Length: 321
Image 1 (spheres, rainbow, N blue to C red):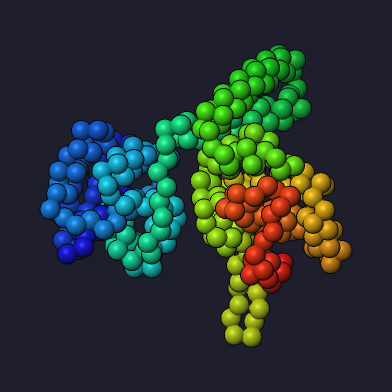
Image 2: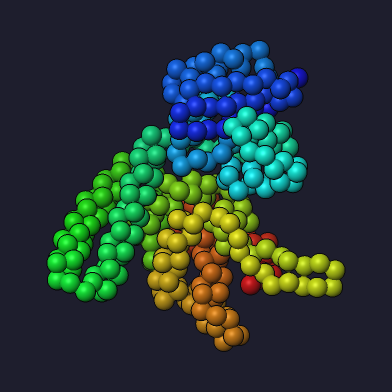
């Protein structure tokens, strides 16, 4: 009998439930607990394991189970909560959440899972640290403009000097780690105007599916795919939703540059603006085309200038423009 495992992850413990047998398992969130969990699962034919993204607390057990041969899917907590709401489950405890996740594991469609190597995990962490430093720098820049005393202004200026030096150091580490990955996709991406080494590193670290999936899926993963809101004769406004915010933010900045240097993207942007579209709406539309083209470039292994989208993808883009 195929079984499904749901795991509710906290900083110190793991609450798991095997469905449909209803076996409850509680272990520590540490290597000894992972071993104990695997021992408890002996004798079950686990088809899928599902857990939530919990700020990194789930990473070690996810990697351990993947190495042990289990198919592990990590989902956004909002999706798990929406599933619980659809089942009219309002109560929330660790045991209830594990049961909900096990049920979700049973019905969720199969999807490919990519194993994150230690080198790629380190690059991701460095990129996240850079984002945090930039956020702190920008926050203190705003505070400096509002500072009313010289004493506070001096503290803020000292902070800004520290943040600038730290950003340079972490960017050097990012470049070294990106080079250490030896990922040929990075070399291809940096040839595209608008994409530097940091942006290329972010794309391969935070969007490992790039170049390995179809155009619709890559646009949806980034969060630039427009969704329909139609019912009967009513045709609603298309809008984007979800996706990976960090990737989308980097792609937005890259696309601002690409629109200036890429004739096709520039023509598309200007055409949308002439039709009355807002600047940000036009940029998002260009972002969708941009990521689809990058995906096609990496999937086919051709240089940027030689990328030719399949006719079905061209037609799809025109329909949703």
